[in-house]
Image (cartoon, rainbow, N blue to C red):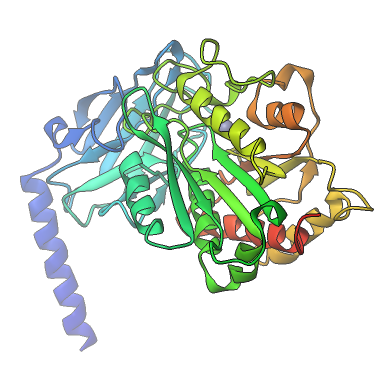
Length: 404
Ligand SMILES: [Zn+2]
């Protein structure tokens, strides 16, 4: 039986090799448009299944590359791929800092790593893909999340009676700016007695952090969060720059604004603020003025390593209150059984950063602010999702009972 199995495999391999020989990839098989795209990218053939991609730049930033996201929309089966990527504009926010992923269905993603990394060269690097098993292949930054994927997720989440989807407005290109509110509408705890938390993703290309937030939302809808939902309200803005994934923009909106540099601690101001940031900050201000104002505001980002939260503690984090911030740190450690979250540290409040989302919200409202970074070393959707669950479990434990 084993010998027969082996010869079948060999025959299949020979058929595949024959197919690959008959139809290797051509530049016409690639597109840089679609839900995961790369504005301004060009591609040329270098050799058999070997191509060079030259990246375009972000709006307003000729030195910031757009991430090399693309679709092979036909003919991939049996072909491997060597992709040399280069960006002539400069070495800021280099494209080879994080792993990329590929998928045959836009659901299941496989990491693919740069051959050299930024220590060797920040403007040129190579991705080597294994022999493809299907004709259509999607490639994106980190574990990507397109706006269309977010719409799918929101459609599924909103079926739950625990979820209210608020569309805060439209992006400059007309996409919805979502805030999901999750709480138990049948809870006997009055809204003003519930703990309230606010989470928002600023940098659109930091996709691992968006999956972290998806993990937070999924956990909140599970049975083990029932008690937490009765005495808490959580708000999630999963994508503050939804025009970005189809362009490969890493940090900006259509105006070229770095989306984490768009807070105004003196108050939202339409004339002075990035378009989408004004909409989201105005909404946060309305929440803060409501009967149930947030006690924490989380900025959701990706940098290297595991998920990596940093905290500016607010007034509830005292010995006489819920306990010092270190108690929250210890609860994170307790729930982090698979070590996907780095130990919580304090984040210094620098005056120069006062118009970033973490520092800005803390300065404006005096509440606990968390810069939730990291996740660059979590190469799978599952690990990023898990890190979001860990955070929510720690929040549920630390914010015990109800508000004073
Ligand atoms: Zn960021």
